[in-house]
Image (cartoon, rainbow, N blue to C red):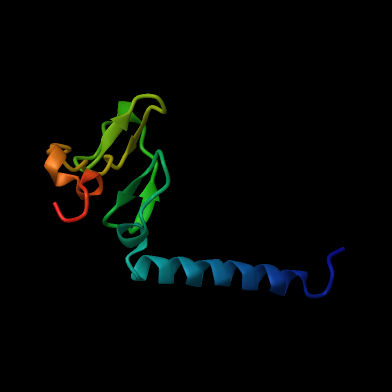
Length: 95
C-alpha cells in the first residue's frame, strides 16, 4: 500500500529531472561544462557520451587505452623554452 502522495511525488521528481536536463542542454551542456574523465561531449545532444575505443572514437576525441574509452584530448601544453634571463624572480633588484 502506497502513501497518498507517493505517486505525485514521483511524478514531480521525474518532471524536475526533465526540466533540469533541458535547461542544462539549452545553456550549452557539456560544450560549456565539459565532461568527466573517460567520456566525451556529444555536440549534437549537449550530453556526455561514453564510447568504447573498439567502436571507433569520434574525430575530436582520443582513445584512453587504460580505460578503453574515448575521451576529450588533454589541453595543449604551452612551450617551455624560457631563457634564464626570462625568469625575473632570479634577478637582483635594479639589474
